Amino acid sequence: MRIYGPNQAILQALQDSGIKTILDVPNDQIQSLASDQSATIQWIKSNIVPFASSIKYIAVGNEIHPSTDPQASSVQPAMKNVQNALNANNLGDQIKVSISIDTSLIKNTSPPSNGQFDEKYTSYINPIIDFLTSNGSPLLVNVYPYFS
Image (cartoon, rainbow, N blue to C red; front, side, top):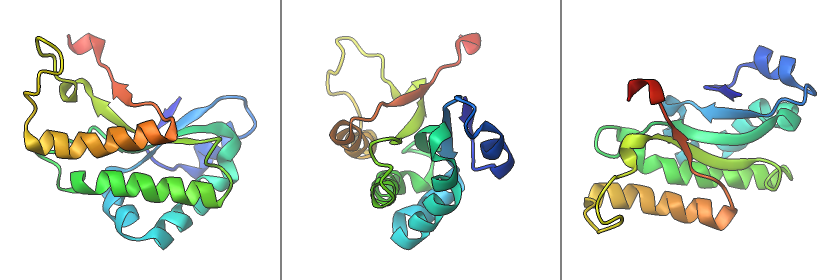
């Protein structure tokens, strides 16, 4: 189950239900979490710690595009701050930090990975992939088969 932002009533209802959730950091909060570790610690204490047993992933942002979203440069620093705050609360092994992207960020090229990505894209996605790899976190992709 996915929740697109912290909703205390929903999180409370899911507590101890056995249902695991993906909880999003809303896009409009990414810059704040990226620039202020104390704000991130407070966000984790308020929105994650009381409900940790029902949260499997925290998705920092939803469908952020490096060419159109001004907060794109803040995503990876926010992910790091969220991971640090989870670690400080002994939740870093239990809850994984990721991001939800849409399929347009997965280039379909032939041959695959032929280096045709522009600099804005690679400077955005490469640090995110490095973060995910170093923390054993998955890359979450929003797939809309009904739009195909």
